[in-house]
Amino acid sequence: MNNYYKRLRDLREDHDLTQADVSAYLHMKQPQYCRYERGLRDIPTDILIALARYYQTSTDYILELTDNPIPYT
Image 1 (tube, one colour):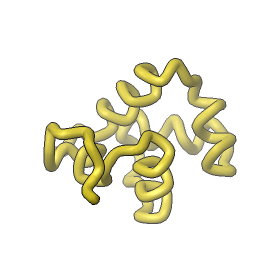
Image 2 (image 1 turned 60 degrees about the horizontal axis):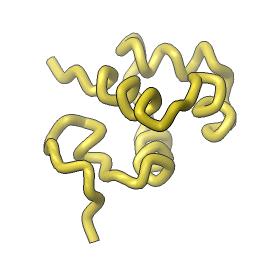
Image 3 (image 1 turned 90 degrees about the horizontal axis):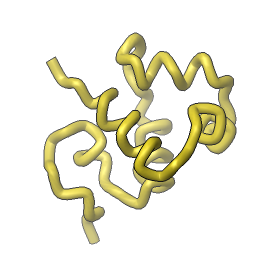
């Protein structure tokens, strides 16, 4: 089982952001974003891409397919 939701939380905390900050960026309510972070809901592709852009990383890093946070060029 992929535990990418832990990486979402770590990215947010590393950037000193709250769930409310990230959910506002994504134009969604905080409880909805919280479900992604807790692993209760799968992240839709468009949200995953938006998060990768927001954190300036790759979707592969968020999904734990790589441990390299540098985005592809």
